[in-house]
Length: 250
Image (tube, rainbow, N blue to C red; front, top):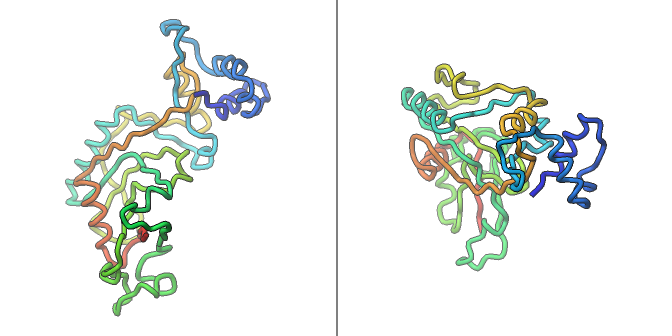
């Protein structure tokens, strides 16, 4: 499926002003323009369509630099090794985007559910006073007796963010606070490229010459880390009063 948004965006650099809607309504024009914004590759069959997924245009506001990981397996290995050396824990992988229906357990016959999200650390009295124990920290034991709680983790988000198609690294350091920390993993220059955000689409189209901007359904749910995702979520949940939390009740 053609990515009209990115084709329109790239066409502007060529002095062609056309909206994604216009490309959607004229499939032949859309395909012709998609070929023009990319790079030719005589080695590929002209009878087949080769598609590359480009970042959504909305991602331009996320920063001015993109780090392209060229060897994901090796990248994961180095991250995990560095975290283990510190005696810490981490989890990394594709974000799982959830629709509302996915958050309701049919066996409960519940037609509704509620999401509870803390907006600050549990020891913030103004934000979390309804969830505080005597020592002014959030305690998961306060939820004892409430049925059908499903805890979301750092690799879960709601489907309104699905266009981001995120891949995330979550590191839980031994020192629990909100201060910035640096994980030393050594040089990564052999497995990454650093590209200005404004150039990332041309970078990818040149790397995959002969490909056109398209929408690729991403059903990956790859996860790696020092332990399972379930174990990592439990570890995070049990740190009372130190972090934000999300849970579903329904």
